[in-house]
Image (cartoon, rainbow, N blue to C red; front, side, top):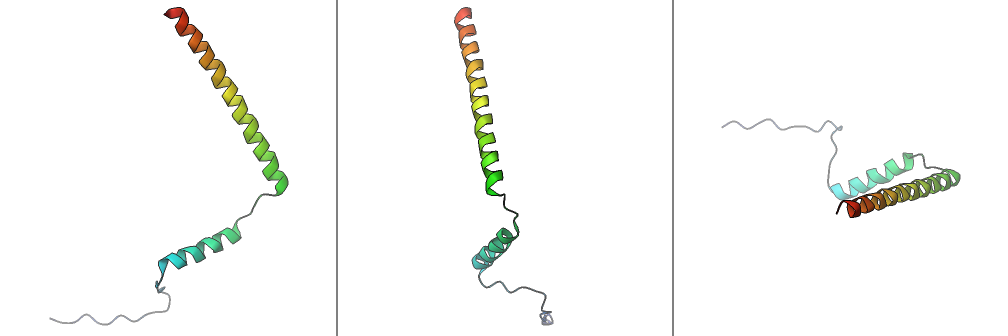
Length: 75
């Protein structure tokens, strides 16, 4: 059987010795490129989420109350 010719490294191939550390290095690099919101934006959006959550909670409570009364009438 003939041996396959040896492959030479072209330099563009990455050597993966420790894939876990490479993952962490890439993650840190990506986080440096993230455009983080300002404190004002974070505060405003947090308040908005709380208000919407309360509104949805109240709406679901009213719907639940209505269905509860409807079922009591039917039973």
